[in-house]
Amino acid sequence: MKDKIILASASPRRREILTLGGVPFDVCPAADECAPEHLPPEELVRALARSKASQVAEQFADRIILGADTMVVLDGKMLGKPKSKEHAVEMLMSLQGKEHQVMTGVWLIATNDAKEIVKEDGFTDIAAVKFFPMTREEAEEYVATGEPMDKAGAYGIQGYGMRFIEGICGDFYTVMGLPAGRLLRFLHDFRGE
Image (cartoon, rainbow, N blue to C red; front, side, top):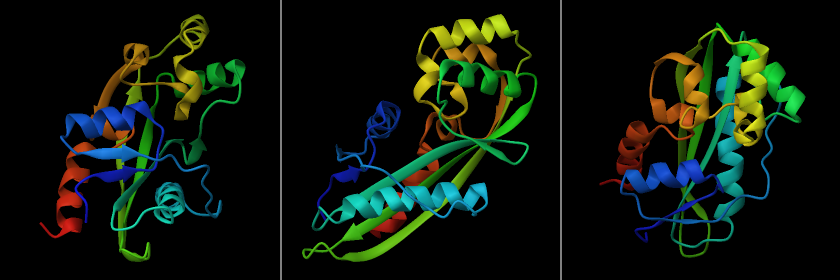
């Protein structure tokens, strides 16, 4: 297989993480993803990652395709990307002063010369994040920066949103969108190195 993997995501954060990890890659974002909505969050996020990787795998011969998806889960309820500024503020207010889980599903697919899937496997990594209490005004100011609008749970831990983080139990990079250490080991084993 060629050295470069194909990242089935347009996420600049995932590109940054792969670059930091020294993984050579090309980008080919999946158009969309689909998975049965009745799945528990841990399985759903992995199924969405698999959907992305499967979609892109059809286009490439003799490559490894990486799909990933991240979601925030609070009290068993999944929080995706906000639909509006008001929705983002409401999400942030629901998280304030509480602990929630951030789940990132990862799926790898290897194709052969005929673009057939010869191997696939994946995992879900979970980190617990606790927010400091915040005021509605603080949430509105943060939303006004525009940063939360394309992020699950309406915050970016690597940006201005860091001011709300009281603590993390788990991999920081899982919260950012790709569990770096676990992925690098998983990729090594997947390639049979």
